[in-house]
Amino acid sequence: MPLPDDLSTILDRIKNGEQTEADMTALRQMLNADDAAQEGLRQRQIARQLGKYNVNIGQGQDIQIGDRFYVEWNDEAIQALIQVVRKQLPTPTTGIPENLPRSGVVQIVGRERELETLHQQLQENERVAVSVIAGMGGVGKTELALQYAIKYKQDYSGGICWIQARGADIGTQIVQFARSRLQLNPPEDLNLPDQVGFCWMHWQPGQVLAVLDDVNNYDAIKSYLPPIDHRFKVLITTRLQLGKSIKKLELNVLDETKALTLLESLVEAERIQVEPEAAKELCAWLGYLPLGLELVGRYLDRRLGLSLAEMLVHLKEKRLQARALQHSHTDMTSELGVGAAFELTWDMLDEPTRYLGCLLSFVCSSSNSLVSPSSDDGNRGRTVGTPRRPN
Image (tube, helix red, strand yellow):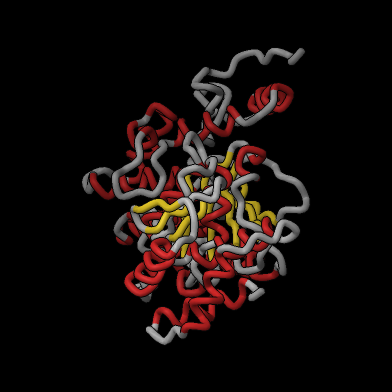
């Protein structure tokens, strides 16, 4: 009995119109084999080979070729197979398949070293590589992941699949990407996890990057991760603290120099040079938080008559209620204002950690930073009062 490996060779000859009578006899024997001891493994191997041509064999062994269904491999089904192999040749991919969100950042500022470290982490693993960008809300986790995918796109010829993890169906997103970008057609009678598995199994050749952005429940995504194969790389952004087995890149706020560079990239350099001390104080008051700096920088860029010193006074008066910090702009990667980003981070904390955060907030200077005892500090929008000890 021919092995399924021979099926690929026969199909290649059918593509080129070079099949022989011996090929067709071997093909019929292969497809109609009834070897109980090896049937399960053999059928899975055959299904994998035929899946490249969008030929699907259901769990009940129903055969779908194009829009037609067959109950057995009779002459009509085999002729349909030959036609679909000849007509649906895999076409060369024009470009790398990807679904990256649009970035409003022309050039990433202050994270060059982190980009290099992240690339090293993802390339080191011999098995499927999983790396995590971790950190509080607003430090730029999503932007770093996006800039990494853009910078190293050519390294991932197998495609870059961007998956929104918070409040969205992860499995459905993977299947939709495979259908729209890779022209895969997982059998409809499979459940969603099995459809995802089908997609990973039939993914096009080349190194693949899967980005899961804003993961808030790791257990919920594990069953959808790619199989153990060194060509698959997984990048996760999260506020969670995951296990030691997963490589982690902890993202912190910027230092003063990088914060000023980021602000200068958003505001005319002359305005920074005219008010250097106000610029430094503004960065410090924003806690060197990239999201805060970007929101305020874009706000200043639209209001050319507003000085940095006036902006700082306004922020100190209004704090998180300041319009400059409440809403993102259409050309920004982040869709959250600073308050909303803080609130998401606060929601991820357990009760004892929240209690400790309330205690620590009393040692902050109310005039020197964005987060202080008198401000709405992401504490679900409430002003911090006397902390209540957790039960």
